[in-house]
Each structure stands twice: as structure tokens, then as C-alpha cells.
Length: 232
Image: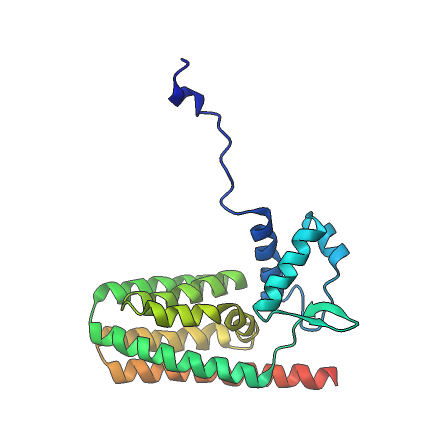
């Protein structure tokens, strides 16, 4: 056969992401998951060798991560993994609490079984990831849980605000999810959110969301204080 459809059988598909985007994902994940730790220098030559990409791409990646707050470019030191700031962390959790509490309340008031089902699915995946010690999986499914909270009630602007902070939220979350008992306490707190939504209790859903964020904030504060004292 020589028709057009036969000719497309061996066509090389274009990758869904560019080399720059793939490199960006790799370095971002390495920072969020703790492979590169706060204060570590990010040497362009070493990153080129580790990633297998050009120095131009590495520089673009570092500039992008600097705009996200994950990389700091200090005079006479060059690029390094940004130190997490305690005051900034508190503000991030304040914003999370306000928006997630609102979303949980609205989900409860919607009384839609499909919302509960989607949240339970994400929560089940979170628990499975904890059992398998798959911390990137915990982060991914936790983000999915919160995306459901906002998307199912058409609060896309609010989710957009949360998304702007997602990288820094996940950087903080990557620390809190590894602390003692968080693998049971975190999902248990999220289960309270789901149960309040299932019951159609907006006040209880709001409070459960705030309590969960407050708990994460307290853990992050303790971890950041310990990190700071350890470097002094």
C-alpha cells in the first residue's frame, strides 16, 4: 500500500514536552523532593553533566526556578537552592487555609456525591503512596485532592491562585509529609474534610480544612526552625 494512511504508520511522534521543559521538571522535582537541599549550590557545569543538556538550557531552567522562588542567585556565590523563609511559609499557609476552607465549605453545600467519590479516590491513593514510601506520589495525589475541591465548585480563579503557590507549597509539603506520624495524621485530617462534605456540613468542612492546614503549618514551622538553628 502506498496511500497516505500507510505512510503515517512509521511517523515519529513529536514529544509532548521540550527538552527545556523536561530538564525543568527534573530539577524542580529534585529540589522539591530533597535531592537538592536548601543552601546547596547549583553548578551549571555539574547540572549539564547530570541532565545531559546544554548550558543554555540549564541557565534557562535556573532562571525559571528563580522566578518560582526555588532558586536564589546570590552575589559571588551563584545559583543555589533557596532557603525556605519562615515568615513566607506562614503567609503561604494563611492563604491556603483561607482558600481551602472556602472550597471545602462550598463543596459541602453542593451536596454532590461525585465530589465525595473523587476526594475519596485521591485520599485512597495518598494512603497507598505512604504505604509504598512513594513521597512523590503523596505529593501528586495530594495536589489532585485539592484540585478536586476547587474544580468541582468552579472556583478556577481561586485554584489559579493556589497553583501560583503550588511549587512552594509542595516544597513545604515535601518536608511535612516525612515527619513522624504524618502518614496517618495527615490522611485522617483529610478524611474529616471528606466526611463533612459527605454530610453536607459546610461549617464542619471549613473547620476541618483549617485544622489540617494549621497542623501542617505548625509542623513546617518546627522543621524550618530546626533547620535554621542547625545551620547557625
